[in-house]
Image 1 (cartoon, rainbow, N blue to C red):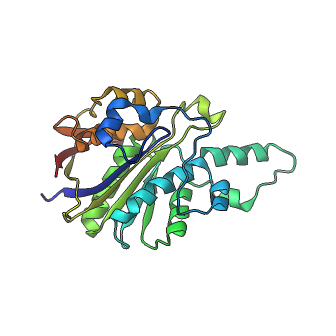
Image 2 (image 1 turned 60 degrees about the horizontal axis):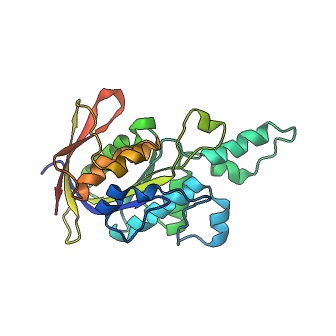
Image 3 (image 1 turned 120 degrees about the vertical axis):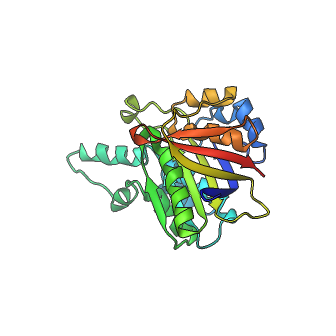
Length: 262
């Protein structure tokens, strides 16, 4: 049990995802992938004016964190993991730099960095504990989970993990063809609570990463959103399939997880 954490909350946010629906049913149906033109996450903790000035990526990340927050204590740390980050804000800046005036609002720079989402969340929720932002390309989910697991164990504190990405604007989309926005969140603690959903034992390995089982999850991977590499883990957490799940890490290694539902 030395490398074991307890999962107290898990959430999936996407255009067709229903917060009140059973996670296993959601994954099997694939309805969370249903397209909805102009869809944006709308976190309750932000006033309408703030929602208008923040990017779709940041709004999505804050929405995921907002759902996790009730399952975490005030001293909980946060890990935000995004393979692509603030693509829309960067596009606005690059377009402005092509004009003779090169006029860019200072707020654009503030919201263009990779930790913009975590910063905006801590401001909105009044959180003063540590928040880390991670980018690992296609290995972002594995890297985010590894950081979360290690921080929770070494500091003996709860950690909220927020994983998210939204489609990039043209021409960034030509090299990274992500087609569906989605965010996945997990709240972990080192001690089992009455509300714990699963115990997760973790270790490093050099075996290939695990495949998904449901048709809905297979369709999700076709959208090329790196967040969906977490779906094999969500399947086990929701009771679909049994056994270990290996998530890809950089350098050919993997993060092995063994899920015991509670």
